[in-house]
Length: 95
Image 1 (tube, rainbow, N blue to C red):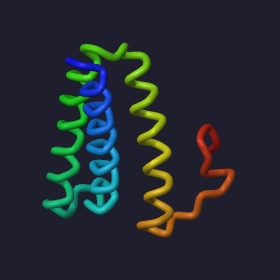
Image 2: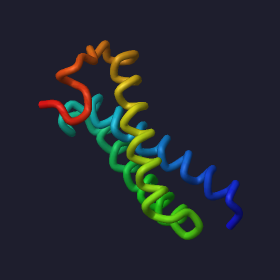
Image 3: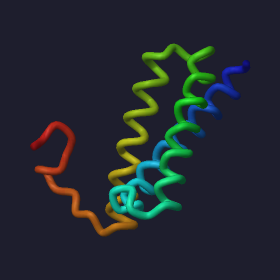
Image 4: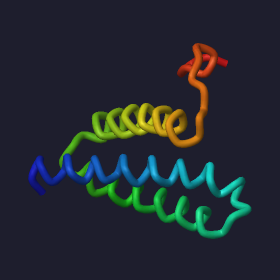
């Protein structure tokens, strides 16, 4: 697999995980079937795509890019789509 294809797969991995996480919120604790199934499918797709990605990108690099980028995108999407307020107590590492 080429490096360009690996990067594309990593991008798709991130997109699948972010979409799944947003659907998880919409699923209302798995009370709504369609968003729940979408979330499960998104997480499955993310893991499968990540497994393919780590065949050419070191797992440590792929994982940090996946989790870091995904987390940042979920924070932005939560603020934009769900009007979630991001404050210092909500920032990473804070309780």
